[in-house]
Length: 275
Image (cartoon, rainbow, N blue to C red):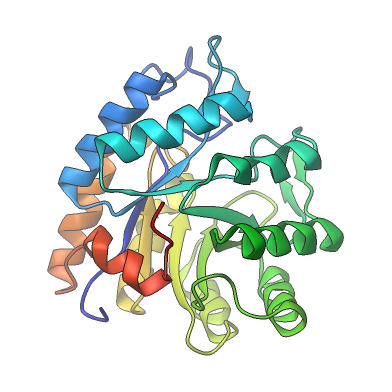
C-alpha cells in the first residue's frame, strides 16, 4: 500500500453557489455522474456535501440516505459524508449525518476562522461525534486545519482510543484563510506531529492546490482534490468538471511512481465495515 496514492474527490462543498459555478454538481444525478467519472479516473473516496432543490447546502437526513444509497449502487467508491456541513449548521444536525450509514465521515479537530466566518468544533462536540463514530462503526477521517488541531487529535486518541477499523487517517486542509498556510514547510511540520502509524492526505485550497499536491506526494502522503476546494484549474481557466482535477492528481501520482490506490485496498487499510 505504500506504493500507491489514495485519491479523494470532494466535488461540491458548501461554499460555492451553483449560479456562480455552473459546473458544480448539486443534484443527485449530477453527483452520481461525477462519482462515476472520478472513480474511472482514479479516485477511491468521495467526500460528500449535498444540496437541496434550490441548490442550497443541507444536512437533510432523507437526502443524505438517498445519496449514500445511490453512490453505493452506482460506484465502488468509499462514501465519506461531511459532518461539517455549512458553518451555520447546528451541532445536532451534524451528529445526525451518521444516521445515513456512510462508510466514512469527516471529523474536524478544532474550531477555525474560515474566511469571514467561524467553523465551530469545540472539544465536547468532537468527543460526542467521535464516540458516535465508534458506536456506529463509521470510520472517521480527521480533518486538520491548523497545527493546534493535530494536538487535539492526539488528545482525542489518548482519551478515547482508536477509531473503528483501528487505523488513523487524517486530512490536512491547507490554505484556508484563518487556517494553516498551504506550503511545504507547514505540511512537514504537521506531518511530523501526527500519531505514529497514521496515514494522511492533504488538501490545498484555491491557489495552494498544486503546491500542496506536489508537497504531499514528495512527503509520501495522499491527495484530496475537487471543486469543494478549488474552482480554477489554472490562471484564467475555470474547472469544468471534477474529473479534471482527479485526472491531474492521478497523473502526478503516476509520475511519483505511486499510482492511484484501488478502493478495495483503501477499504482494507481503513477497516471499513461492509454495509
